[in-house]
Image (cartoon, rainbow, N blue to C red; front, top):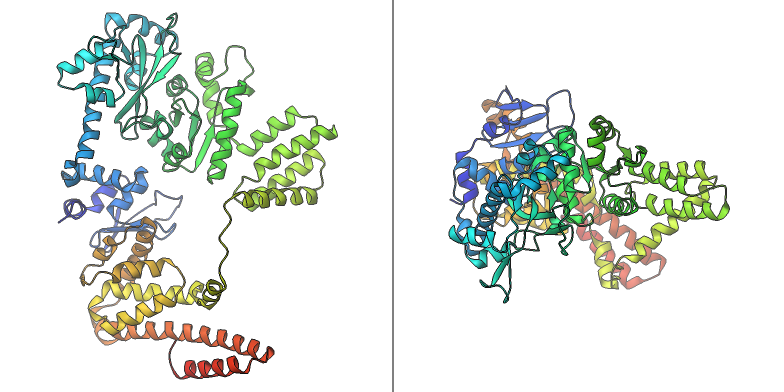
Length: 612
């Protein structure tokens, strides 16, 4: 039994889901309001016997791992680790050298953080505490964000961690010390006389540190220094405060992206907790992918100086291109000398920030206001610049309806005719497509093969039949003969790509016949395909449960139903092949190609007499 099976054996999906939702018993199932979309009538169903869930409203479904991935925003490995902890299962893969090396880095970083926290609360940390207090960081906030202090020493961390049994290699790999031939011990501490801001992953594991110089210190190393790239820390994939923000993000269905650590901390002080900050980098695709786990809605609230505005623009453009619903919070609307960022605003009046956090402006409106405030559209040259700049943003919108809305706005506010704007954005769209790698042109042989593919694989009739035969396969595999399986393989070979086709390919590759449909679900690797199969199983289960044993014996014959489905699918392919052949016959007649015409007539005759 592997780790996944052992976890499923020990945990009950009803209990796990029940920790997040209020489940009500309904026949063989449990029901609740779906956590993945808004609804008034429960359509979220958990089947204890099958150990799967499915929502008939939004379509999400799967097993215990799928649920945790969706509700917690985890990937499979993270969900595996999370559920293993719940089940008390020691993962066998944790014995690997690579995993153990990462675990050792986690341990040395945790030990370092504990030492930094002790330092901050010691006499040597008095100046650092005073600075934090002056910036509005209370003791409670310090503890919440696990702030620390690195002493003004070249070897404090090295000496203390050495006594705890950690070697120089561990400390160097964790980014805590730097190798140097000039040092007596061969190493010196990276962080010295600085306030320590630990960076955690989503689950509270410390990954690295950001260290701020104390005011008045004449360090030539810059205001902030950070942990370098390590096996577990990558600043382009890290977000400050994400461990404390993820539940608030899911609750609000919105992430607010700020610029600095103090902005995040002071925002928490004001009660706005769905906030994160980048770790000294421009916003990256990897960071946005992490945030997308928790919400598709993202708002930027960067500093109102020129650097902050430019950073916000680039981040918004990237987020729009990735299909996120992007907004902006206009900090510049609070025109005060005392404030330029969120931290300043909170210290001035935390209610100001609370109101702004609840008044997110769509990103395009933010752009419109900014560009039209900057350019004088009554001047022809400035109007051209304003239109060009805004079209660059509109073309990033993934939905045509959104593009149409903002093109009308642009026409109305600049006086440029709508038809001209449509022509201009079409040129930009074509230019954008052309900039991507062009597709390799198909050879005549490939073209012929493409044209010869069945058109019906996209029709609803075929989808319904494939869903039905899939349900039969997982519930009544014992009725599928070798001939049935060969016929299905022939069907799949002729069909165009589809979720059902891929599911069938995966479950047919295993010769074992399972009595539990859930076992077939475990064979599917893709979350999307697993969701599709779980939906089919859940619907089929309801149908089969509605048939009594007597009716099942007298009116329902799985073997006949299998043969009916295979025949119907064959009829669809045959009809499609006949239509395609008739078109070819007509072309051969028009071209007066007698040899090809005779060959096609024979093919048509064979099709009429046989299957596809």
